[in-house]
Image (cartoon, rainbow, N blue to C red):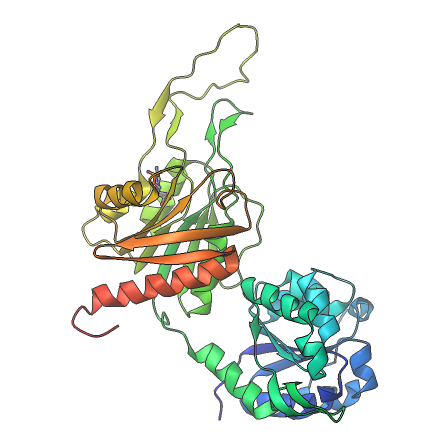
Length: 406
Ligand code: C5P
């Protein structure tokens, strides 16, 4: 009955005839003890009144940016952070198109852009609109970005036709929401991740760095949060929002990253080294800005600690996962790296002109472990991170309970 105890669900309602069913959905979500904040598009208010939903949800229904002027209501960014799940039911073809294009032309689409919470859509539209290649392309694109589609169902439609496009019934949406929150294989487990580049100072204004954006590590942190893990994210200098629920520790140098990793290591079950740690750092850091008076300048570089190898070599190592970006002979080099560093698993990817990798939104990975491998095809990093997290969890439990079937 109270399966959604305390979960914060932002229910987006867009303008379709199925909007009338949102009232029942709010009632069921509330009965399962979820907190429900309704956000409606303007078109949705033509189908069902905000007052109905306000009464059922017990919260002021939000409709546009400007109602945040009221001191008592929370602003749109805070609202995006507030949600544990954004569920759009019904989701019209137009809303899906706007979401696919990253539009932020009303409150609901803006919240979807600004959130780090999972987004689920319950499409509802005429069957031709659903089957239209434009809608199908939008649906696939959204899925590759990690948006989940619940439905649509097949059957009789309000327009008199029969086919796919009906919104799932409120009870079915409720059980999807319950499933979403209960599928938490890492509940009670702790994951430590490094992400982003490191910056090794040369003098007070210059440093040696690299092009890592940190996107993969942050997406992976988000994916682990969704599996119920407690997540600590040790981040080099990046301009990314902290995944909600993660504890973020900012560092600049490899040395600082190493210190923070060892400070948090004892409590972690899984360690994932996503960071592109600078292999070398200047031996000395000039106290003052180096002048450009000399024709040549030689820097002596010394090796940085290999954080991943150190963790793997510790007395009671967690399940360790590293990355290997290679320009050729991917599998051979990655396997060598895995054995050399004695890590449980390596996620390898080819870097170079046409591939994913640094600074890109997409990537493909080959995951290797002792006696096995798995290909994770090219996908947005958010989606890829979910697949990688699932693979890590599978191998983590296989190692922990070797006699049981995974
Ligand atoms: O040896 P290479 O840099 O290719 O290994 C990459 C893997 O090792 C990544 O998982 C990276 O985060 C980790 N690493 C590390 N500390 C270093 C260098 C790499 O943790 N100093």
